[in-house]
Image 1 (cartoon, rainbow, N blue to C red):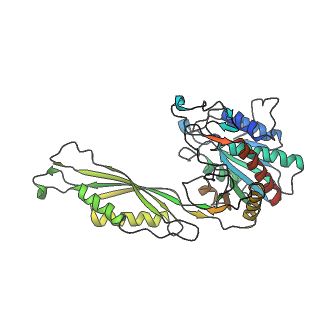
Image 2 (tube, one colour; image 1 turned 120 degrees about the vertical axis):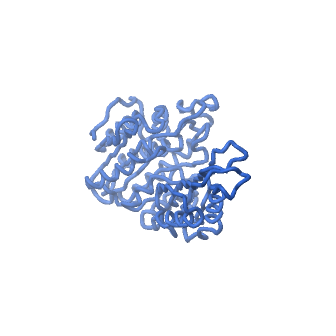
Image 3 (cartoon, rainbow, N blue to C red; image 1 turned 30 degrees about the vertical axis):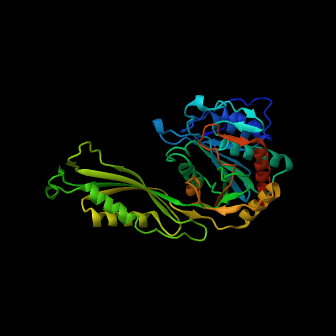
Length: 391
């Protein structure tokens, strides 16, 4: 744990300008796990605005993960903004029309890895806070929880920072995660929850033998297919008020048998379940193991639950956020729980949380980008939100 920051900021950097902040961050190629330079720059920006900045690296060796927590003020309400500085790899850079870490602006569009996921969102937050501070903060306080491990295994990132925050009295009253939640147009969607995610690795043991003498063997492929058929025989559910139906997808079926006349000794499959609030990971894990034991007694199942489903009922803060979005964009955002997982699944264990950020149509793609106009609008939305909740 270290206080403060290192490294000078450009003398002409205007923290009220989200595009200038985003370009500076994008030019740091912080491929997950973030090596930290972008967080040092971010820390310096926040320190210049009066934040107390604490760098919180967790993990050892190759798993060492840089994280940052910064807080301005001590009063209530305490509003936290959460995000990540790590990005996915750019892939083949020659496929990019604009270099992935150059932060080029062409025809009103900012290009670069992290432009929308999510250095652009962080930049909008910094600019919003800078404007909010200039206008005079309210009675409350603002903090930022920034990890370098959201795109990776998420082991030594947000979870560990939250534990530290709890131990040091920094759990917020409300958290806004800046993930790019809008499918096509800024202002169309706010995430108020997420489905849970379960991965299962099923291994079925059999008895190897010649295909001409099946009575002398026990074909594990047939047993595994029976397991998968049973798991997929009926829908898990038909959805709930804020969640779409849960879904099970088989992602791999492996035998490794190169012979045409051999019954193999082993067969394996992997599957993923994205589940809503009608289930828990433990219940689904028990169901999978029961089905396996019924159809393949000589089987074992490895389960990994990367997150439970969660839902944050709309309250006062959500009403303020919706009003801020509508006032800037003219749209009434849909409250949604679809899509993949995010670090909000960890935050929801500690306080109410919602997600709102830029348009996400280009995330993880070649030529990832964000409209300059959207970055300015998002800044204004964030500023109005901080003001509206009294932070």
